[in-house]
Length: 460
Image 1 (cartoon, helix red, strand yellow):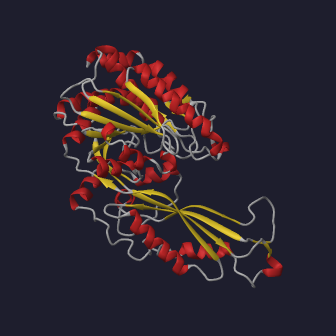
Image 2 (cartoon, rainbow, N blue to C red):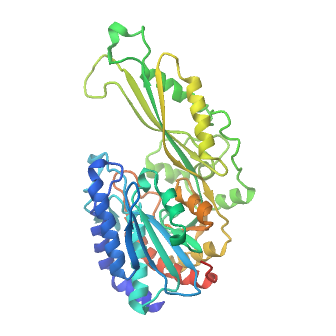
Image 3 (tube, rainbow, N blue to C red):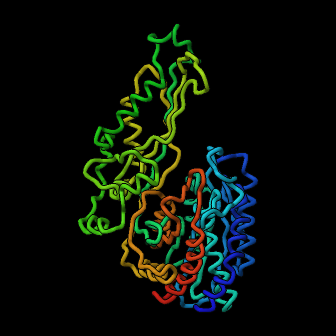
């Protein structure tokens, strides 16, 4: 491994410049204006995979954006890794809050700023460079590897489940590796063993065929904005508990062992508030901040739109109001069941004076694995070798829907091997990735292949 590490260290600046090229592609899957850019990013990733020595590289069409596939199956008897990542990124709004252009990667104070730096291009690219280091120095990898990169993760991976089911033979492996998550804290590497699931909806209310004069009609017809606000207010009680009937029926409670382990983590609530400009923390009564974000379900309003929002005054009674809402789910909550409970509750509390439309947009199942399985332990050793610190074991409040798909459709355990940071601003302006973490992640990824190669014989 010494030659591999030397190669990575010698090429450190080149790796950063190549990452900047990838980050310059505005592959925003949510916006139709960027269709060509998303496809261009898929082509770029495929070409880079060929360049570093991967084989059978191709774009596989889906009803949406293509999946980029490549492999290296030259280690008979060794385990096979299925590496998953995504090449699409979130929109950049509001643009005026970016300190530098979102698709002109800029390094400031040891951080590289660009949309996709942490989520997920930077973390995908560190695996490309780890693979390149092995193949350039020894001509082989200590494991077999199959790579799939999708272009629709940021819009709910709407075609990925179908893709996995249709390509089970092509995706044979022993373990899934995903790098799309943050460390616990700066200088505190971690291994994630649990993710929350997701259900996402749009609620639309209509009270009239057109906006109305608030003087002429106010008091005679319902105001959809006010009706929507009243409906949303009924979703939680004052203690932060979701009021949807049946919402908590399947929730798996935290174990005493997990609670005690999390209490030992270096989490500082005062610093947490300061870092994110939070006047006072709020959440479900009876749980700590980590427990609320990792192991408890939520209901959140993600967006609101109604009426006149420009400068000045306009005495209008809006015809329509809209809210986008999401629920994060924990084991063993089922997205379809929660969605049905939510829809029934919304229909029950909506006033008869408005037309109601409920649109389910996307979602995914929660996931959890045992952190004493050999692949997770191999990842822990690799992180320690790459970063010089023993990792902690954590859960993550976000969602990666395909993790459950891999478990259910392919029967594969997953290892979440992320090197982002909690303040990386993923999905927000000024997204960034710590450059030292990027470099350490390349080394740790190279170590991961070595550790997994030693962990167990291949079965795929």
